[in-house]
Image (cartoon, rainbow, N blue to C red):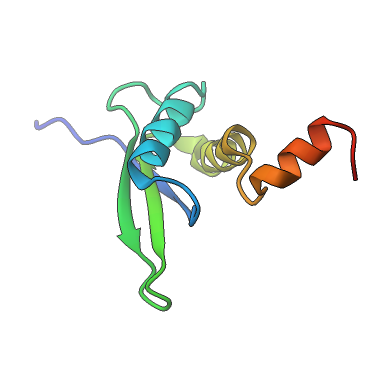
Length: 102
């Protein structure tokens, strides 16, 4: 019998104000750090385009640690990337919040 490849899933991110190569490395590192994501094969972040809008997207492909919890693993990856990269927050917004300004 041939070994079966692991089940994989993906999550997509639009990061218009970030360097794509740097963002890909960050997303791979974040996904790899999660207990719900398998370490082998390691997560892989790739560039793609939204077919409707042609906007640049980063797609992270990963294998969930438990095939029965793929939805939870995807949710964990999305939350961790949003937390780790402060997706959607502009740099001046982050400075304002950290200095106590509104």
